[in-house]
Length: 335
Ligand code: DAU
Image 1 (tube, rainbow, N blue to C red):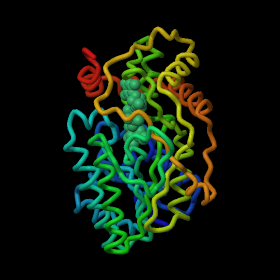
Image 2: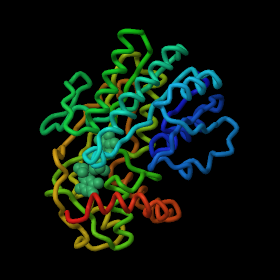
Image 3: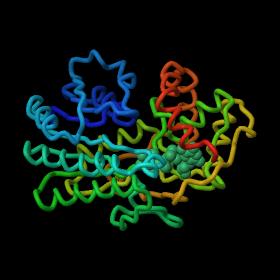
Image 4: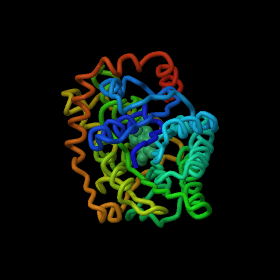
């Protein structure tokens, strides 16, 4: 494995993963294929732009010709797919682009993996494919009981990966990660949204009773987990990837306000997300058996994340305008 195609590498997790690979594997060459849609942002990669081992190509994973060209030209021997529409609330407004990018785009990449006989195709998936887990924790063998169009599209992609492993022997691995937090996360996701609103003394729109739970992991821990599976995981296998610690949304909101020295009166309960999954919970024994451990507690991860947004207003202030504000008012007005 030397020439790695990272798709969706201008997004939040993908950009961290590229930086991580360049640091950990000095001989690797990385090609980043990203369509630069609303949440793809080359500012996320500013510090590595001039690295001779890194190439950026603008393009859509649904564009078979473009994917083929990149695979051939750069002699790609491994592919890691981060490219996806990822925001649950947007999938409730419009599901078509999720099916297109997440399912059809994955199929295009799998076809390319098949043609170029890659050593590994890795699919970055999500704990949301299991559906809500009111008690206990999900195992990799549990059924996929998705409840949002976003989760259903990711589950479709997982199943397509499995089909390509069985039918064509493509060496596919899948990680199903819990919620990520850290620098460069687009501020539609709850943690950067709450941090940046709190900095500006704006309300924190908390859905429903705020007693939904999420396992928030630090993005660099997630990248390490993907790396472990990419290099040591078994083809055809799925690996859950999270901290195994869940936090209530209301507690997360209070912690952010405390870190920023802002009053709890900024929390505003708003109408709940339709079909809101109350809890996800992963059993991560399988990836731990490969030697991976999460390095950050939620408190440490949150503290670092809050500090980054305080120090990097240049990054998020320009995002919070234009398309973002249109989405924000459609999503939150009258709620
Ligand atoms: O679990 C992994 C998943 O985490 C990823 O697959 C998704 O791509 C990612 O978007 C995330 O999904 P969530 O729906 O859990 O993330 P989000 O940040 O949208 O919401 C986290 C929790 O906060 C959830 O219980 C809904 C709640 N929430 C969210 C927003 C945006 C609020 O209370 N208010 C909000 O304004």
